[in-house]
Image 1: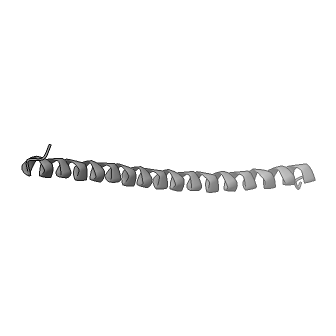
Image 2: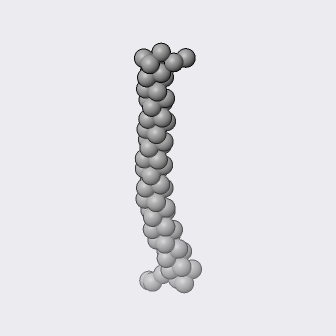
Length: 66
């Protein structure tokens, strides 16, 4: 006994939904990785700016400037 049209449609929709969910999960995982990379870059930039500011202050103190 074969599947009815409704059962065939349901099976097709279920398989399409599963594939879309898999693709969405991969996309979200990739976006999460990219977001993490940007946060690390942002942290590195902030640290770099702070280090440069600290170096400038030390140089001023070494030169006797207020």
